[in-house]
Image (cartoon, rainbow, N blue to C red):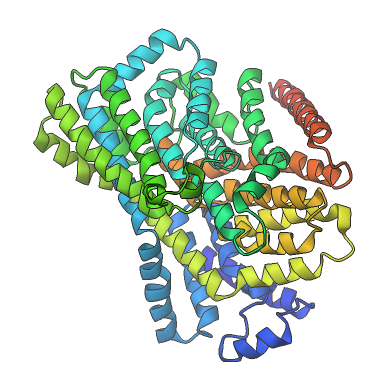
Length: 542
């Protein structure tokens, strides 16, 4: 009943917003859309994503929230025709959503099988024992997670799941909450890929820059020093760990982990509990390191192979032309076969036991796969409603006269678009052509504007509950998804606010060597003030 009332309130609010002057797309495009729903290309197009976000945050349950957003969007597209709505939800939403992410699903299942095999051999326990002997503190375990996340920069999906599976035993032993682990994983996934020239993200940016008259990879590299959000997000993690300080909902999770050994706070999934209760075997540290290194090496080769490195392309060219949804499962399948053979030769895991890990890996990844399917379905719905075109149109036609303020405006628009749709790739796919056509090619604002576009896309994606990277971070840490979203949100907003100020400054001071240190100092002072305020609040409470 509460959800129904909330849905009706949102619909009334959307009608009110539209009646107060929300403009539509140009007349030329309106003629094309005559056969479509009149809600396409209007502010209504944002309502399904916002409904999903609001329901997820209010009711702490993400499956029905995403599905409600898909249904509402389907109703808008089909103009509330019952049979057409069901058909749209099933075909365009769910089935097309699963088709577009099939490669990711295969990759997730294989990684789930990897985690299961590592646990069955006792390699995770062996790594935990080694880490306990060499990593002496909670700070050390968090820094180890941070540095491992930086080292795995090829792809954010791979980063999230690989870092999570390797570091979970270590952080659990040092009483670091799963919510904190998920945050560190997330903060070293997309932000790292966004400043790494050799990554699937750089390849995507190069692809979206095609036809603009620029070398996409060169444009990406030139924009790296101004990508304030990604750089500050990494610095933020280091500051937070060194200061031994948390704020917002994360405080409760970290306190429960430190004082009571409860790293979950929210009860973990049954699959996680079963995995934690598995009896360890006689595995060694090498039984974790060798398969993980094989996986990293084969994934790197698979990405450039799919991109055409054997056809005479350079490493950078092959990476810019690759398809991660093909390359990742390609490399993971070979790595899985070799790992099974390795464990069989070592005598730590029988072939039959290894095969049993495949369905168990699938079961462990079902929550992530389900959320990813529904989130992709929601993206398909917002695409059909022309939400991207609506935002792009208003962005392009409001740019005149802003000049030096434009980077900050681009950052905000990109963040809102990525947060609403749950995808940063689509966001900078929309905005890059606009940015390139807006700025003078000889002006430093070209690279600053490009950085603002990329940074805003990462920021919005970083805190969106329907983002695939956010979902993967929850899966990698085996943390309740909404716990991860709620604890991470205050941190993302803090870094985003400082980044906005940095882009505002960069619009006038076209020198990152001046702007970035000032932004870094601002972030440090902000954390000091938050720590002092938090300490005072706890003292008053006591």
